Image 1 (cartoon, helix red, strand yellow):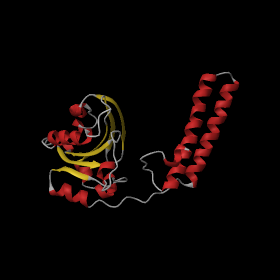
Image 2 (tube, rainbow, N blue to C red):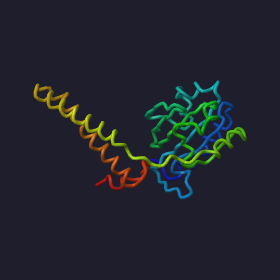
Image 3 (cartoon, rainbow, N blue to C red):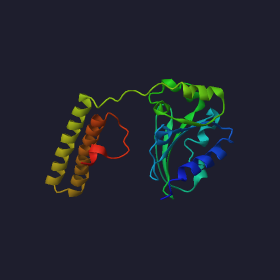
Length: 215
C-alpha cells in the first residue's frame, strides 16, 4: 500500500498532465480531502471531477486508456448518472481514485444536476475559464439526509420474503447450488437494512468507519 503522501504526489502529477490538455476544462477535488477538517490516511481514496470539452468526451468516457497516466490500472467499476459518469479505479499499487467525468455542456447546468458532488465541498485544482470557476462556486448546498421511506422498507421486506421462499423451493427440490445462491441474497438484504439503520442513527450516508454498523 502506498504511503500517506501518495495523494499529494498524485494530484501534482495529474494537474501537470491534464491542465495542459486542451480537452480538459476543469479539475475538481472532492470527498475527504476537500473539507476544512479533512481526516485522511493511506487508505483514503481521491475523488476527482473532470470537466471535458463536449467534442472530446469520448476520449474520457467510455475510453479508459487515459486513466493509465497515473500508473497501471488493476480494476475498474463504472456507472452512469444522468449528468456525469463515475469510474471507480484501483491501481496496482493500491491507490483508489474515483473519477467523475462530465461534459462541459452538462456542467453548465450544474445546479440542475440530480446529485451535485461539488455541493459537499471541493477544491479547484484547475479551471480553464472564469465561467467554470463561477459555476463551481455557485454550487447549491447538499440535499438534507432523507432516510429510506416506508415504501422502500416494504419493498425490501417483500423482496426478502420472495427470495426466502424461492430458496426453500430450490432446496426442497434438491437444487442446493441455486438454493444457496439465492439464500446469500438474504444476508445481503439484512446487511442493507443494517446500513439503513446506521444512516438513520448518524444522519448521513457518508461514513469514515463502521460506526454502529460494526456491532
